[in-house]
Image (cartoon, rainbow, N blue to C red):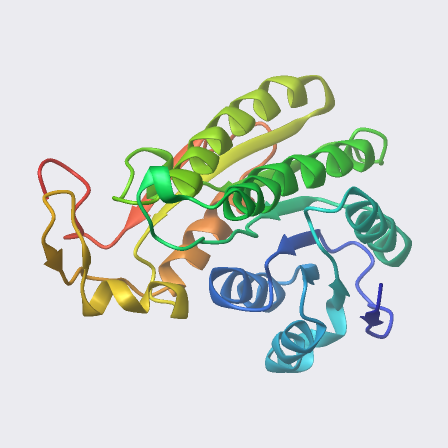
Length: 261
């Protein structure tokens, strides 16, 4: 598994974060926000070139970054990721479980098994594997504890048509968040979930052009700046471990979610 390591950070007391899916979209913007706010950040994703581009975009703050090519659906790859994190920075204060995939939009009976399995492996199992490795570091490090923030999505509450795999994994993410919060108490590990609606990234571009609604019509939906997501994550991460945002929803105000749309 290839990886690129930056020069040693001179700020040994800074907090250390790990962001999955950091090469593009929401993960990229969160990673840059953390770097710009004094964190050392491990950027994880499948495409090393994209991760390195994110590090380069951080400018002078890139010295505090470590880009690691990793597949969150592969237990061995996840173990290597967290081992490299610990070897580079010596601890882990914040895990952002952001990696996720959309599979093709088709009716439930037409979902290909391979696409179902990919959704479960990356969206759910990947978050579980990363959470498990984070626990193993956070519970023994000194000072102990840490924080985990899961990207849940609006789909953790309400489905879109033809999205059974994504919806099921995001509903399951809510269960993972609650179980992590409960099992993390004894280790001073806090866990919260941010549910994001229509952040303006390449992945949501089609929503601004027109997307299928529950009534069968096609309609364009408003989007919001992805910077608002990063600001929300920074707030959640800024709290002392004695306080926690359990669930937060940040969304384009007029997107069809509340009420009848």
